[in-house]
Amino acid sequence: MTAVWVSADQERCISGGRCMAATSEVFDQNEDGLVVVLTPQVAPELEDRVRKAAYLCPSRAIRIGDGPSEG
Amino acid sequence: MNAPTTTANEDLFAYPQDRACPWQPSPGYQDLGRQGPLHRVRLWDGRWIWMVTGHSQARRLLADPRMSADRSRDDFPAVLPRLDAPIFKPIAIIGFDPPVHDVHRRLLAPDFSLKQVRAMRPHVEDLARRLVADMLRAGPPVDLVEAYALPIPSMVISELLGVPYDDHEFFEAKTVGLLQAKSAEDAERAGRELWDYLDGLITRKEREPGGAGVLSRLAGEVDEDGDLTREDLLRIALALLIGGHDTTSQMIALGVVTLLEHPEQLAALRADPGVLPAAVDELLRLVSITDVSGVRVATEDIEIDGEVIRAGDGVLVSSSMTNRDPAVFPRPYEFDVHRTRGGNAASGRQHLTFGFGIHQCLGQNLARMELEVAFSVLFEGIPDLRLGVPLEALPTRSGGTMQGVHTLPIEW
Ligand code: HEM
Ligand code: SF4
Image (cartoon, rainbow over all chains, first blue to last red; front, side, top):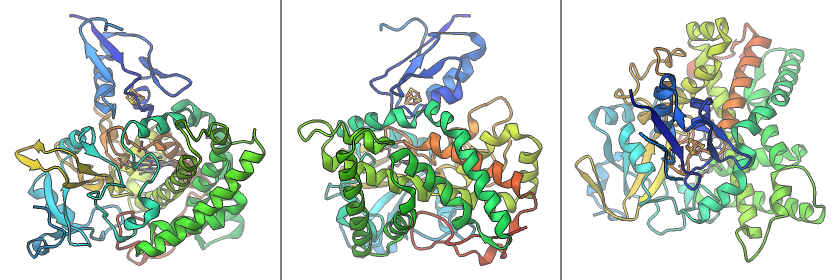
């Protein structure tokens, strides 16, 4: 099974915290309320919930891919 | 063509229509929902706009940068007469497109983050317990709106902003005056009084820097040539004060009604406090207190599901109906606090009660926390709570989109 990677774009983030509420193991909010990815490489058991977080994100700031993002 | 008044428009479904049941959408919307995801409806001024009842269409449209939230545009639809009042035209944050929207939203984001809100919770619990103790002392019957549902969000938002709670009767009355006004003139009058009040308050904060609350902090950041002018700050203060208490207080009130009318769901909640967050999201979904997820105007032609939304067309997303799209929510009209069960941890949270896209509610974490506290403290403190009048006799709001009750008589 290939691992899934997640990244989040702080430029797009509107700080609602939906990702953190859905999957606090992977997403956090910094002091400005902006998304922070704690673990870019997603553990297989968390993959479903990370996909859910991406779906719930209102500003489409969360990207899921099959490798680390380019920064 | 979207002509302002044509005889053809007169045949269209008239929007809005009142609910027949406090937690279910108006019977007319339910009929529309069965016919498809997109509908043409007629407004009070004869103009027609799109009403969206499909969940996936709503998500796509609300996240589409071609949809504008700019209230000052001539083609922006005034869904109710009061929304024609000049005070609503440049309404802060919610009524601006990027880049201004994003700049102002970011100034506020730190104060509304999940962590910030969690830190406030013990304080809100103390407040709710004090209010319950007061109700028990006063004895039944009590108006739950006045004694509980309104004071919680009202005190929380005044403290957060740094607005003296001693002035609450004034700003609560003016907010209701503004939001329930039947004409643009009445809305403008109430809005101006709030404006003058906030103007005076911000002047005091400018004179005495370092005070508590978001408004004191922002008063120190005003820069007439920068991102935040004094007028911007006043508009933001107004938007937060208005947005912060009527929605949440009416959601507490109708949430209590819904729980009391579904004793088996209330019992399930009591049996397992762990379902509280899910129960709150399910109540938010079902009650859809604002009834609307967002209003926009298309700035370009947008093709969606075989229809074309033309540049200049108004679009209204119905939260009560998108929250009942059977493709997303099985048994959509049922109240089920266990809806999130069955593996799909977020399924109950897919509701669009707080909107979607860049304007999704800034206060949603605060509102969720206040609702969790309000329901749990109330039913713990007054376990044999019941309605003081039959459900049909509740004085419900009418003629608008924002749902609610004027009073909520309770007994125990
Ligand atoms: C149950 C309670 C609440 C409900 C149902 C609710 C609903 C909504 C909805 C549907 C929107 C999106 C409107 C649109 O896209 O046009 C919104 C935006 C907003 N809400 Fe709430 N709200 C609630 C509580 C609050 C609270 C407590 C605050 C706190 C101050 C607040 C402040 C705002 C602000 C500032 C926006 C504009 C956000 C933006 O445009 O980026 N709301 N709300
Ligand atoms: S859900 Fe999206 S917008 Fe909200 S905090 Fe997470 S990344 Fe930001």
